[in-house]
Length: 459
Image (tube, rainbow, N blue to C red):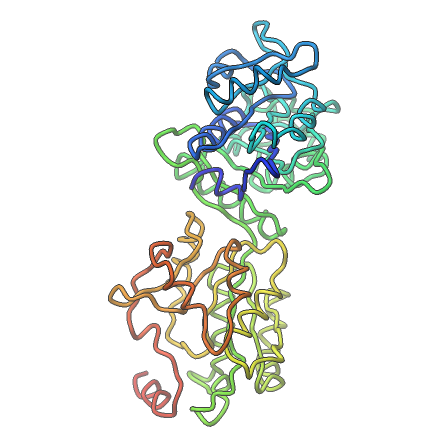
């Protein structure tokens, strides 16, 4: 994935993105990588820092301007953007490190973005002396008020290192934040997650209203990727999305995986008129179909499972009560009072019930008892590596369920109407759908008594 997509940016001069990078482990590399993506998309960007920046980092910008008197030469900036689409803004360039700008200058620049046709401003908001981990000192980070997205970084090469120099920048601050006295203590994924979420750590200085998305950098080996996934999982349990990246590897897309709270939705609201009885409660291997589906949702790799009830709601809820109690809050039941109008209303009920931090949702019906959990886990992996729509295909024909939809598509789910699922959203633009080959038997549903008899005979 590109950074601009994984960070969920929508850069536009009418509402410019102001992205502040903090923490340690690749801030400059991330900043200039993102700037290159924005320019590559035909938009204009200003990069800057509110701390200090080294000469080799300055060289990554096509041109830099100075604002030593605290003012911007607007005509020179316009010329630079016209020529290159990207300009680095500094206050001086005296070796060995150039000084950054006052954060109020960034706020003023954001106010004039429309005049400059400027889509984004990217800010390196603290220093880390090239260490992979740090906790901020009292005077940092220096984050502009106009910031729309705060991105704290952590280098995954920090995991397993002692909480001491030369491994950690100002290690006394990090030990104090974690409540650890012994400098020989080694950094764990749990410590990393705490650092990123702490109000005195990764969230320090976050302006009101600014989005927050940690970036776990240097996921460039199996060991570091594994450590990153552990941290990302811990963050997701706290409702926090994150990214696993290797921004320094120019030959590949920088973001390896995206993580965050996700939901698996079981659609179980129908009247089962063709079956002649509530198929949600039909038992196979001693287990009701709705319980089987809910258990599958819980095991799919999603953070949470959601069952949409409708017809037979009370009986379905009673059947699910033991599993819901055992799930410890991971299983929610939502009643759809408009169930009779068709499946679209259940998709809408589910989408409306998703938490604001939900990053993607997996939908499947209650009557696909042969769905393998491995297939659902493969679908979640496909979403994590950047696919916003993921579905199954049989002999290259896209099926409607199971299917995963990224939060970018939630408005489309809410626009569905009638007695159809989300298949039209998958077939309208098939090139935008990542498909996984599936066996026909895995996707077989149970609609009629004959279907049920065939399923039972085949077991």
